[in-house]
Image 1 (cartoon, rainbow, N blue to C red):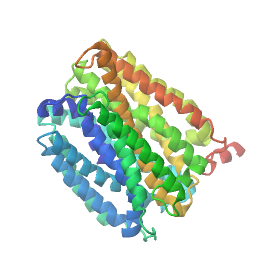
Image 2 (cartoon, rainbow, N blue to C red):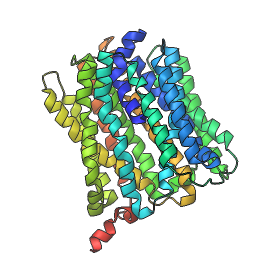
Image 3 (spheres, one colour):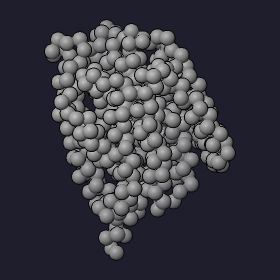
Image 4 (cartoon, helix red, strand yellow):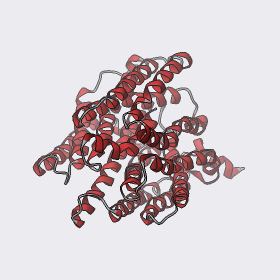
Length: 449
């Protein structure tokens, strides 16, 4: 449900902008406000799950997310839209990380790769169905309908959780690190908000600069507090675990570059190529289709080559798969664009799943809640940075050309920048030891055999 919601928003953005009377590029705030709320509240998800029980929190999160989806569909202006999206983010912050925690506490390390593959396979139904379904609903009914479809999905999910998922015994989370949560929340919210408003004219320039400076100051204070605290909300000691720290740090760059694509692609197809929302969705779901096709191949690939080699080689392929989108022009046949996007989905899926699995390969059982919360926060922050990266690329291009709406070359610039940002993560994954995550991938066993 969350992935469905995330994938339909970008497809519906031009229609939402026309209805609400705002610029489509500026409406990226509808995406970033949701992602910021995720970043702010995910760090507390592990503590809440341990304190009240993962199953109970999971069900409450589904209810909040579903109600917020209905409120987004009823929004009549930018203010109410952003407020409802923030409420959605609160629900989403408790929904996906806690759901992952329910799984991780019940599998052995040797089963982790298979379990993570099964976890992500159903989630990919959202990106596969989202763009075409969102586009068709936007054209045939309204952009509001793309949020209302979460209502039956949410009710079904709630019933399935109640019927099939047993309660996991509660852990003692200790006292809540309220100071740490406040500092990290302020840091993430101020940084993304400051970056989101650069060059937009929505707030004075001094306010943008103040938010970025305050965000950096809050980040430093949050890091110092986390290092000094006995039970911090964000446990930075986890970064010392190489198989966790490298995917978190390098993965931030990779996800930021990749996160720009779902924002740039639907806008370019609708604003430059002249496709309808439905036509755009029927093309962009190719990425998710490629991701699904890759899933059965991930385990044998990791067993044969190991995490380090796969991540190093594949990051180059995935970066090229994003940068090549800059070559798209209206003269390209849609089937050719579809094929390129599907191929890019293959490589990005391999990288995402490999990094996600490696992250938990060596994390101790008692730190799983903290690792899940930290991983979820960093992932969503990376995606928020990706949307900001895409919108800033368009804004910079429009400023340089003096245009009020983005043209083809501004989108081309955005895809090239996104690909280069992803490529920088190569230097991080190259630091992994050759046997990183071998217990999970079985790479050493395969070599000995």
